[in-house]
Length: 300
Figure 1 (spheres, rainbow, N blue to C red):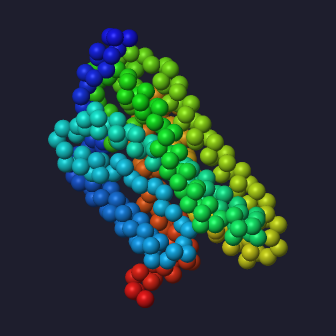
Figure 2 (figure 1 turned 180 degrees about the vertical axis):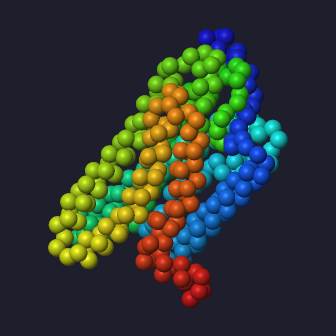
Figure 3 (figure 1 turned 120 degrees about the vertical axis):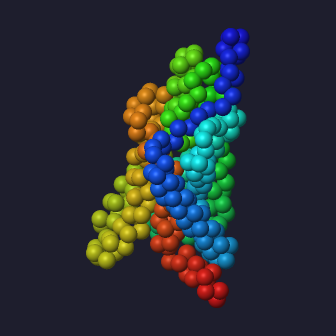
């Protein structure tokens, strides 16, 4: 036990390989990710302004990208290093925000279930107070769920290898580096269990909600009514598919080494693309949000 404690802080920094390639390709990738990141910020800022402008809106911005700025900086870094403390801090915020995103996706599924399956109860259930309580729950629970796994990872011995073949401090690569020094099956089991519980619990809840929604929609007599209902749900389902398909490939069994070479690419889907499409999918299809954005842009 004392030996593990003595070598636990031998590694003072990690090297994030990112996307090793020729300089010209790195410039191209930097440009793509930089433009995507700026558009993501502008889209979410526009929605935040619209929400402040029009208090009738109940759409919430739920996902913040915590890894892209460091990834962009690494394109021009010679060493591509990140300190031990910053790496663990990035891990904590990245997973906490990802947990919050899972919870918000579940709330959105519940919102659509009420709107389509219980339309008469919707105004009395989805009150401002209840929505605020749900948002607070998501943020608080999101930042508490992965606190124990991150603490366990912090206590692991990192005695030598410090190269992470990824663009962020992710759970799987960190567990692999620690296991190269001292096997930690207990920590791997706890991290994998908590990841799987979160992912599958929220995914099955969303799937169950939309199963009930589908049953109701198929009973709508008019084609126009069914089309409108499907249009309301299609955007959210697209994000759910994009987010959960990539997350399941990466985190259901962290540290197992499955699809190791593809991990950074699957991570891109939910850490870069999902936040980019969030403003358009979650809010810009909403009539009230469109009206509020017109007020902000037009100043009327």
